Length: 140
Figure 1 (tube, one colour):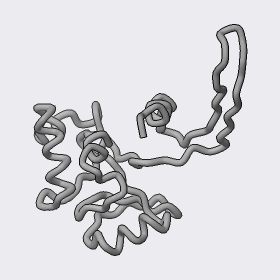
Figure 2: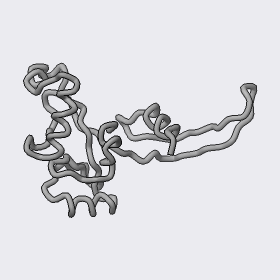
Figure 3: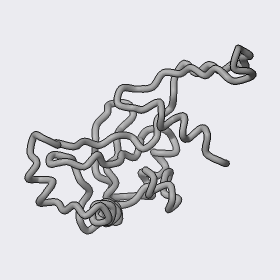
Figure 4: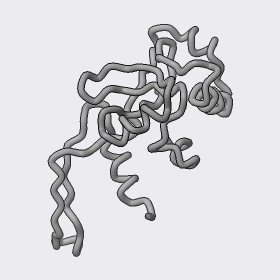
């Protein structure tokens, strides 16, 4: 996610991206970025990011998305045979790059610590509240 954001690719669909259908949760590899970008913008699809492991569904190696994920692995000095060798120890998966928090509530508070903000929200399973809070604190 961080690399895609740094490159301005959070809402751009690359050939080879593993996309997730919003309605069914089904995964597929993008072969037509123009069509899939329109579907992303319409809320029909989401881009997934890798949690690398032996059984993770990976983009085709000769695609822009595959090249990006290979670059990230290379930077971490990890190769595919090493991942494959981990078997059930580290199976890997894919997760949505972006999620929408639910039941969001925010209110100004003043307590013994002084003025502040109380924020509550719900996230889908597998999401991290710390990641959302980090995003909320990023400069615009």
